[in-house]
Amino acid sequence: MQNELETRLTEAVIARLGDDADPRFRRIMQGLIRHVHDFVREVELTETEWFEAIKFLTATGQKCDDKRQEFILLSDVLGVSMLVDAVNHRASGGSTETTVLGPFFVHGAREIANGDDMAAGWKGEPTLVSGRVLSVEGRPLAGALLDLWQSNSEGSYDVQLADTGGKQLRAKLRTDAEGRFGFRTILPTSYPVPTDGPVGLVLNHMGRHPMRPAHLHFMVSAPGHETLVTHLFVKGDPYLESDVVFGVKDSLIVDFRRSESQAEAQKAGLKAPFYSASYDFVLRPAGEAKQHSARSAGDAVKS
Ligand code: BEZ
Ligand code: FE
Image (cartoon, rainbow, N blue to C red; front, side, top):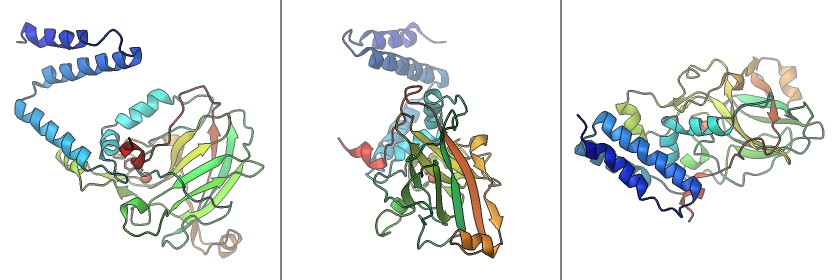
């Protein structure tokens, strides 16, 4: 049976919020205090469990640096990142659906020309990706900027590897006058999120696998439009139904078609067999929803 103090305490903590506190901050803190207190009451948290939680959060912070963001990973595997994305980017008017930014975005990728290879020098299955960037009215957006990043064929991003010689498997690309883009790369593969930190331990305790289905990351921006942060997922991947970060949406699953044709491959500057995928991104007008922000792991450790 709960005693009166247990419920009074919640109101007492909320009552201490200063009247001059920023109204939005007040609202956020009130909600946070209520939910954390409710959680403690609901599960009757023991002192040992609370101390374990504090040790876990401490270790999570200690694992972070300018390349590794264990807190983003924690938010991702608990579905919080996708929930924040969902409440801020409700799909409308046929615009492309969004998904998690993830911890591996890096500012300042090199700009490549349409048709170039963003994976030059990396082994993997040759792949051609093309499409258009459009407004919700179907107008091609010329000069739209695509920021692309992906893991290598073993499932690692450049920032996870020592000595990759700078930014790898990342590029920026602009659409042409008809809103078209195209680039060569390697076929993405499914991969595990990093499991050598506290989040990996917790996933294991929860009896969950750490896998993400194969995908390419896109951040697409154009003046007057909301920046789109999304992925294209490879149809047929075995982890589409159980993505560890809950990021898959049906509209983002794409057929990466395998072709054996040497003639087709040559046209694209590739060797057969190769894969090709096509997708049109639709950007909604700016101001309809909150802007998506492009944050790298490094941004979280800057003061
Ligand atoms: C990623 O797709 O790069 C990613 C997203 C969330 C957590 C870990 C990795
Ligand atoms: Fe990824």
